[in-house]
Length: 478
Image 1: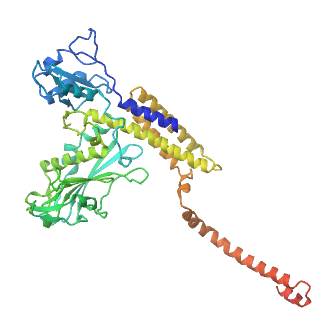
Image 2: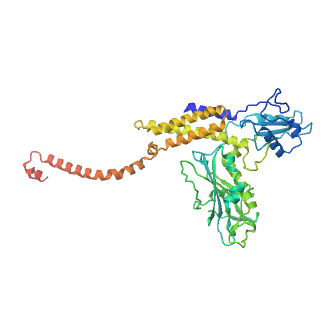
């Protein structure tokens, strides 16, 4: 166990490390420097007049044949024009800085920060996010708190939300999670708290301190996948349409200002976004469908909340004075998904070893328990998969390593919760065990107790009558 934990720590150090190879796209492929990038013209000449979005596309087209473990940093000469030394992080695996040819403190500090390991800890991935086999269910709900005729909203989730806005999301995250998306409409599902009227905002408001109590546990949110506390639970994202008499409704932040997304995150559950119908007034239709402009606003908020649940907002980029180009299609840049792959690799490896260690402790505490061959095979499979993940990570084949670590975690969980492993019995309190045995033993104990009392009475009577002839008749009766 200690050896494997050392391997996991070494894996974290390897992921956080930076290997730098200096290449020059100015030279031909037969020159002193070589690169997997396509070299057709000097890069600085081509990139000098382009805006950042075009630079990102231009670099990606020329380095797309490079391996996924390769990152490109381009220094663009500006022919003496003044620059601020800012780094720009693109949507793929490239970053660039404009360089005026002169050494200045801002440029030097940015370059050092870029090439230094940012952190020895990969982004944190909470354990609730997916099942042990890597499935994440994202459930979207349109919650009508108090619908009435003319004041009720609906959506065609598959056509207007999933296909149009979220179609690229599962593909972007497929290296990390098997993401499944579904949607539903809830009616008559009000919040547990009552908002207050704010004269300053001319609206109803909910304070930041009240948001943990906003969701009602009675909301009938159903999912197509059956989850248990063992294998995780889904992420819920809800669009909350307030009752007409509480509209407009806004969420305040810690500074008593309306939040940018008019929503908030619920740890371990998902997130909420408030949607106020235009004018908070009824319409002619009995139920109106949300249009795509309205949908795009809360989908953007939900993607931001999902990024926070995945731990991307916690990445330590403060040391770099950088401009980050937002990924427009999927919400996740390629280098961010790489970071999630690294996080999943370390997380699943640690979980596999922790689960196997717990199983080893249970088996050690029950030395007389026979271990079924099926459980022994699962333990062996998990250990081999973990060691394979370590070897692949050392070769920088992180996607394959993450898949092996995921398999090791899933098999370890299967061994621990095997119905014939007696692990469940080991975890039950003594009161549960007694309660389970009483119905079996009690019917047997009563006849035994009555027989014991009869024999004890017989023995006492015979003892008191020893040597007394007057007890002979009583002995016969007994």
